[in-house]
Image 1 (tube, rainbow, N blue to C red):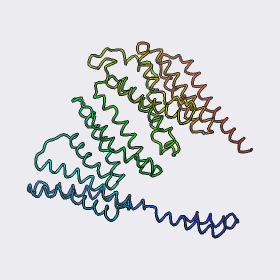
Image 2: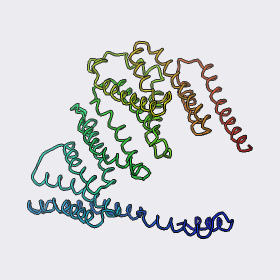
Image 3: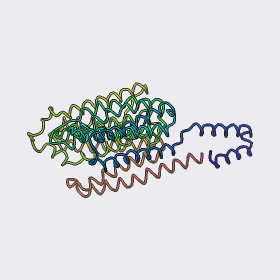
Image 4: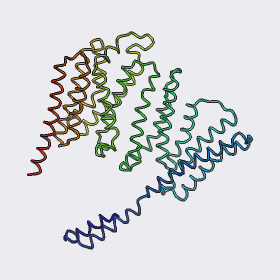
Length: 436
C-alpha cells in the first residue's frame, strides 16, 4: 500500500468524511489483498532465469557434443527433458498455486522438448524438415499449457505455431505448401484462451494472448494462398479478417477494456483503413485486371476467394449477433468494409474508374462516421481519427495525377478547415458543460 494512499485516508478522516475505524478497515483490506496478489516481479525474474538456464544447458551440451559417444549423447539429449519434467512434477505437488514457480517450470520444459527432439535426431541421423520439427515440438508442448497450467508457454506456443505456418507457407513457396495444420494447432489453445476470457480477462496475460493471437492470424493468413492466388483476393481476405477483428473489438468483453488492451479494435481499424487507402488508387484496380495471367487461377477458381467468403460469413454472424443483443439496428460501417470491397471486385472489376470513385466515397463515409461518433461521445481522439482519415486521403490524392491541381487544393483547404472547426467546437462544447 503506497504512502500517498495512506495520506489520502488520513485526509478523509481529518475532513470527517470517514471514521478512523473505517479508515483502518480500508487499510487492512488493501494490505490483505496485496498479500494474496502474486509477486509479478519475482515471476518475471524467474521466467527470464528459466530462459537463460534452458539456453545455457543447450549451449554447454552443444560445445562438447562431438566428443561424446552415442550413449552419452542419448543421456544428455534426455537430461533436459527429465529435469524439466521433474521440476514440473514438483510444482504440481508443492507449488501449483505459485505463479513464480509454475511459469518458469513450464518454460524450461517447453525448451527441453525442443532440445531433446533435435539432439536425438542428430544422434541417430533422423532426417526431417524444419516444418516437421516445429509441428512435433508444438504438439508435444501443448499439454504443458493445461497440466501446469502456464500462460507463458501458451504465448510461446502461439509464437511457435506462427513460425511453423510461416516456414511452411512463406519460406517454402516453391513447394506451394499450405499450413493447414496451423488451424488445428490454433484450435488446441482456444480452451486455454476461453478460460482466461471467462475468468481472468483483466489480467496482463490475457491482453498478451489477445495481441499474440491477432498478430499470429494476421501474419499467417497470407500463407494460405501458397503464392498462387490472385493478389486482389488476398487483399480482400485480409480486409475481411480486419472487419472480423473490428467487430470482435466492439463486443462488450473487449470494448470495455482500455484501448491498448483491445488489439482486435486497433488492428482491425488500422488494417481496414490501410487496405481501403491502397484500393483508392486507380492503378491498383487497372493493374489487377490488366493481364490475363494463365499461371494464376481464374476469378471463380481462386481458393482465397472462398476463404474470404468464409471469413465474411463470420463477420455477418457477428453483425447479426450484435443486432440481436442490442435489440436495435446496429450500423457501424467499418465492419462492413470487407463486404464492400468484395462487391466492388465482383461487380465493377471491368470498370475501375467507377470502383475507385466508390471506394473513395466509402472512405469518406467512414471518416464522417468516426467524426460524428467522436462528437456524440465527446471524444477528441475518435473525432481527430476521423479527420486524420480525411487528411490521409487528401495527401494520397495529392499524388494522383488524374485529379486537377485546383481540386486537390480545395480538398486540402476543406480538410484543414475541418480540423480547426471540429476541434474548436468540441473544446467550446466542453467549456460550456464545465460552466453549467
